Amino acid sequence: MSKTIIVTGGAGFIGSNFIHTLVAERPDWRIVNLDALTYAGNLENLAAVETHPGYTFVHGDIRRAEDVARAFDAAGQVDYLVHFAAESHVDRSIESGLPFVTSNVVGTQVLLDVSRERGLGKFVHVSTDEVYGSLGETGYFTEDTPLSPNSPYSASKTASDLLVRAAVHTHGFPACITRCSNNYGPWQFPEKLIPLMIANARADKALPIYGDGLYVRDWLYVVDHCEAILRVAEAGEAGEVYNIGGNNEYPNLTIVKTLLQALGKPESLITFVKDRPGHDRRYAIDASKIRAELGWEPRFTFEQALPLTIRWYESQDEWTQRVMSGAYRDYYDRQYGDRV
Ligand code: NAD
Ligand code: TYD
Figure (cartoon, helix red, strand yellow):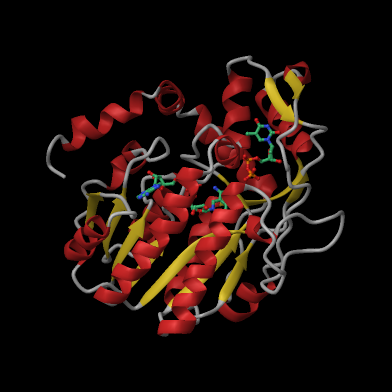
């Protein structure tokens, strides 16, 4: 049956992949994409869905109740709201924490308030494994691991998780929280490890590795993540938290060497640089709850999806060049002018 969904942050990396997943897997759904188009929001990611009959873009900021209300007006009765919109980059949060507090914390509360007032079927809050802090050499994050964020980014995400939890507890608000590991795949802004290293290697530029390069991340192909989120929207139990991960732990140095090998570039491009302050040593997700309760399984291994990702970036030189030069920001004016 046809449903209506609001997606916040749909012009970003995971949000745009999610909208592509929806168009492919739920073609009769109405989709309203609410996005402020920060530096990370790129409507070019969604060029292929612009003519989809059920798709509407609303240019607005989740920090402004009237903007959120416009998205609800455009949607009519809302079955699901999936909340991706956030400042998402740890390094930027170290430079300046305030935008992380306003968008991730205040913005989430505004969204909760308007959603409660207007009513909806299910609210999915997309969070991160970084709220759990850092692991030693062994062990995994479960949904019961105490929250212990270390960066301004993860602290702001933790605050937003707690606001969602409070809305569930206090108001009986129908929300789920998802916490996933590091995503990779098409349309990721080339400030994050994998797309940055692919872009630099292809341009024969230095690959900056923080510290000793032995920091471990648990990589999840974005398509698998999007399918998990759709499963949580449709079948998740309100009030529950679901960890999402693909069991693909690798040290950063291994990732970078694998990329260089696949691209036929020399390891001499690797350059060790000053470490990130407060750098979390290891993340690893135990995703057994979503597997057991919602029947979700990742479809891609790292060995399968990393080559797909590299091939995607190789075929998207123009996209990468436009993102890195900032030219992608003109697209909005050309495409929408004063229409939104
Ligand atoms: P992204 O930075 O690529 O995209 C964020 C999007 O949100 C952009 O389109 C931006 O314009 C929009 N946005 C930011 N502030 C806004 C505001 N105030 N109002 C409306 N729109 C706003 O992020 P991403 O990597 O796609 O991450 C999406 C979500 O998933 C985030 O909540 C992030 O915390 C979470 N997450 C990401 C990863 C990852 O590996 N990328 C891992 C775990 C969790
Ligand atoms: P990143 O993609 O920023 O994701 P997160 O910090 O949210 O995990 O970084 C992934 C890992 O790669 C992290 O350990 C930091 C490291 N890193 C580098 O070594 N060099 C870089 O230039 C970047 C962007 C990240």
